[in-house]
Image (cartoon, rainbow, N blue to C red):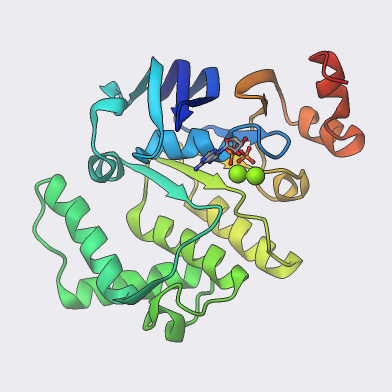
Length: 251
Ligand code: ADP
Ligand code: MG
Ligand code: MG
């Protein structure tokens, strides 16, 4: 589904990603862990096409297409979804209008007619249930005045509405209490099928108790320096990141 080869990316002339290789197949859950500042959010920004970052080398294919040639909108329509580490508030844009515009953009891209009002409301109701998102929040402006936990839950609600092929969850667990974490994780698990894939970016093993990864990677200084099974997350939880830094000759 996703094939990243030797990806290098910079911001303001500073190289952040220094040769990322990653391959994700349908049905898989990958976790990307790593210390703060290692480039995890940069990788997700580059994949969804944030124009602040410049790709200087490498290739990314998504379902056989050259992802780097597509606009951010087309990447979304092709089935790529990013849940932001810091979801933004969009005052004056209601959740209902925002979601209808997004759903219809996807439908148009796939040659389908716009969603009818009744069908859309039914869809909203169904998907809200998955993350137990209050109807009142759905009628407000996007994320405006939402608590940290509500914003994260709203991200997974949007993911549920758009049914992406590949979802990247960038520290969706940060700022969540244990109940919200369970709701968010169970939402992600309910949306999992054999045809989609998930990349879970997280600092901590905690989220991975609920969302079981098939593969765990450690990103450090812009490179994937370790790849293993779920046991790697437990090892990191126990030992922290210092042993990785030692192995890389930095401690
Ligand atoms: P992580 O998500 O792993 O904590 P980030 O991808 O956010 O790491 O950041 C990686 C590095 O890129 C950090 O050194 C950070 O300071 C730098 N960086 C990220 N965004 C910007 C930016 N807009 N301008 C300058 N440097 C940035
Ligand atoms: Mg960080
Ligand atoms: Mg980050």
